[in-house]
Image (tube, rainbow, N blue to C red; front, top):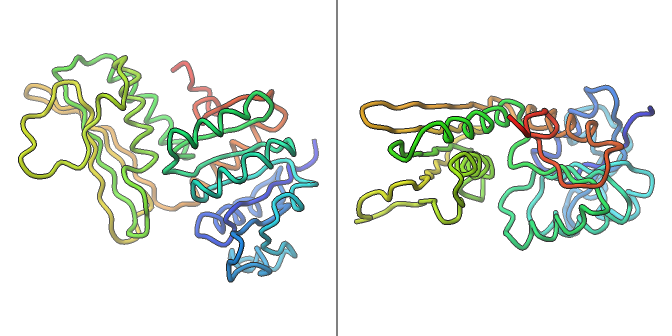
Length: 271
């Protein structure tokens, strides 16, 4: 099979540049396009140069329809509005759409899922192989321990991150809720402040720390009577997310239409 031709959305951003580097470093894929927001000062710049590589002749453009004519997939770590704008074009062109964008609303996710009867979408709050294994373990532990064990999720990210809790924290929370057989929306506690009253039994707590250049630290602690169990993951470089996304795209190439996750990519869906 020939190399998979991939577009990087948000190619001028930190994650976009990491994705461009990951494609250049890997076998089986080539960069077919570099998408950037309309009006960006980076439009027309060389994607390779922006990523710290030799010039590759791929200029940043805001025209996804034109660049997707000869592409196979798109790696999308942008912002909700941009991702939703990309969904229809990716589906119309038959592109594999790998979505790592966080901060998506329920209606945003409904739009994404609406195209998966005819398009291939791989979506995850975190493309790290280790984080997805952690989520699988969290689900198992939550299922094994009863509600005498409280669940608290703590995440730390760099000062520039704009959403909280992070997509990864919510993914871990969903894994815990699935293990418990409850709905996360009805059993989560966030942003405690002031006189909050006692903790509600069975709830899943979230705390978000922001500062410095942290790529992403996450821990899930199960606090029971007289004992605690903590499961954690530390991301040291965002390149790990880029390589995970690339792995997802290559896995999805040629798959039947549907909505997939990194758990599917890693064979963890039934773990």
